[in-house]
View 1 (tube, one colour):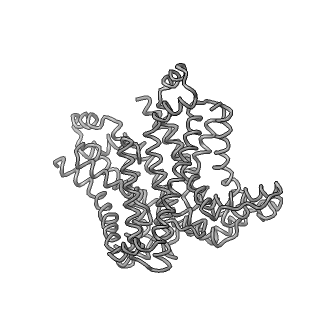
View 2 (cartoon, helix red, strand yellow; view 1 turned 90 degrees about the horizontal axis):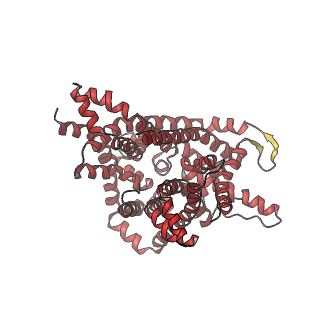
View 3 (cartoon, one colour; view 1 turned 30 degrees about the vertical axis):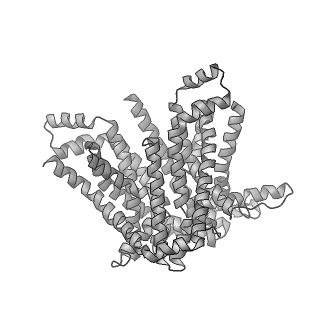
Length: 261
Length: 263
């Protein structure tokens, strides 16, 4: 394949990926999509969407932050144990912990409803969605932190700290955590991005009082005019694109650090 | 505190989350299908047809995505030119878009007022609309899968030794021969891993189909309809359990085949 053929094909594919995004963003700030851009630009649709669906954005942020806190508290210690132990049991536990990624969200969600749908007021609470997001996001946190732990000399570090008289809590908080900050950052960005966009589970888990951003989007796509649906999508882009850029920046930084070592 | 006890205590919260909110629900799902649910699936042709359609769409998604991502990935891994970084950043932008947003983007592209419709009208032809069909769904899944697969291919291509390719060429291999005998075998583990993820995503996701809001009978849509509209819990549970088992098996097999590279 020659350079120009390759470039042409690559540009064609990037147009396929980017043009719909541009069309959607423009439609969200265009006064009248039928007449096109000549009808002028407006923030009217954004304001109307915020008035009607602002709550979904706030609930999604709340769930994403709660998911982040829980996956950090639960996932980092688990990754530490998996990195310290090489045996078959540890590998089986690791295999089990990442399973929820491989099973479609709709199946997990249906299972959660069957198992806990009738327990107290849980079904109507946002905590029900939170449970689903934690199950789905936890493997990503564990893997991100585990990858960093395995790339460094964990045993050597711990032994050095122990020789200096550091107790286990001192070693964990003072030596290990600072060394895996990069992995925790990468995992955190991943978890927040995934939680904000989660739809496969949330569509079944939500109730009319606990609608998240992607569930609201799906509703808007079938019920609202193009300008409003696009404005709503634009709000989602504004939330998610900086997160994605941060994620790529963190990954690039990890690569460079890895190369230096 | 002994090491073993500490390890168990540190692992306990993660195992509790896994057991209570994944294992128990999946067990409930398997049981709720009951004998009735599983026999209904096997005897009613529309469930089998939907399974066939789902597997076909997933297979096509995988083949098309791998083809595109290999071509673009090899090009971007082999060439340095101004704007390459920007191009790569733009092409990985959709990584964070959920399926439901991708479905909407397909409508922007191929829907009633979409780009393709406007362009075909302007050229004096008919209004071409295919977003709300199987073709639209396929387009959406390919859109969804390209960024992930592309990153995997580029990472694998940059690890290939360029001297192998030069050697093959200097020994008189045609460009196609180099691709077939040197590049593709070198990329095979990465392609297997990425392909399995494409396949599993296209089988199990339904945001895209949901946003296209059409009569697309892929399995996750059937499960959703059986559960919400007809309250046919046994069939929904049986279908979900089998779907979960199938995607997990595909990913596990691919991971074995690719030596741990698959997610």
